[in-house]
Image (tube, rainbow, N blue to C red):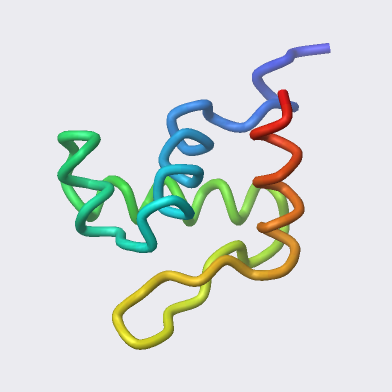
Length: 78
């Protein structure tokens, strides 16, 4: 079995966790030194991989969905 087919891109996972911490796509892109469009694409690909929306926009902030909070807790405990 090819592990790459199963595991999400770790850059996307790292970006996702950083967005959860900061609540800002722009701030996270600046911190990771990547264009905002690249960061947005990574998050979209991660959402496609897990088959669920992980973030929702609310008053210029990105808010984690309930499911993404579960994923974040699981990732941070490892």
